[in-house]
Image (cartoon, rainbow, N blue to C red; front, side, top):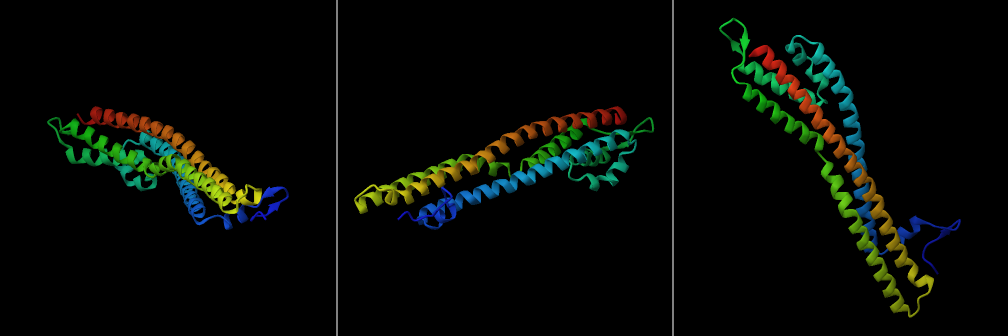
Length: 229
């Protein structure tokens, strides 16, 4: 008798898992953990990038219409999710540290190069924050098919062992091992494909973020040079 039920002409996956070998169960568990972990990262990153876009647009509008950067500094906590805020705070802090009263009685900064380095460091930090956890998606996309392949090979080996021990190749003999193999293959793809698609999508988003950070950094440096040199 085949050790899993057929419901309405289909396989009862719960019964398949319950009757799977310990190795097959371990493979299934690993792939489920990979899949759940990748979906957690996908949803969190999607929410972070979507919120970051909205807040960045609002912060950029505030920056353009404000004539006093100290007012922006006071409101910075409201825009903390935007990476542009990190660049502004780094630039603002370096700028206020450097400012001194010049010969003409106006505030001037001492070294433009130091301000540029502060902005660059802040850009690296913000990009690192945006990229955090994306490595998990790359790992899941790369490893899951091989874990599924291991489960497939193990299921086939188990099917051949059953044939050898029973002495015939009936459906009841080979079905458990073949079922384990197919489930492992399917779960490997289910875990890997969304992770790979999401990783590639987020890499495209990262390029857009980098371009936006570079554009804002140039705008900040231009205004600083125009007003304080």
